[in-house]
Length: 88
Image 1 (cartoon, rainbow, N blue to C red):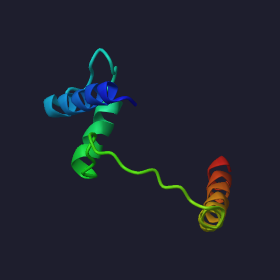
Image 2 (image 1 turned 90 degrees about the vertical axis):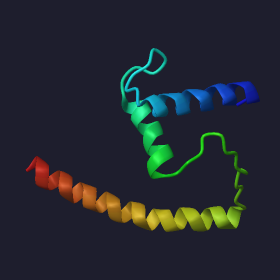
Image 3 (image 1 turned 90 degrees about the horizontal axis):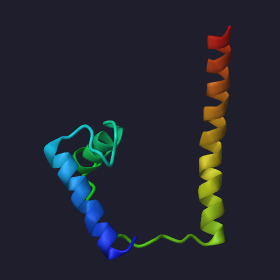
Image 4 (image 1 turned 135 degrees about the horizontal axis):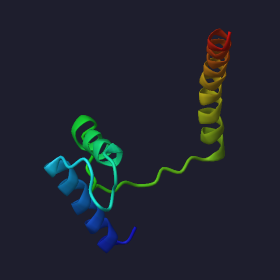
């Protein structure tokens, strides 16, 4: 995102949240405005902040995938069980 676009976006986010507008011509519906509000107020995120991109080497990436894989398998099993219960 170039600096002009970023400034425009930051202004739009803060303006929508400050006015607590649920819909604007650029963003129909309130879901985006509500998301921005949660980001600012609940999670204390700053739309003007920049951060470094974190690049993982192959070993760290594999380790992260393996850790998530265990959780994903447990969640998949639970979701399949829940589906069977609901579907009858």
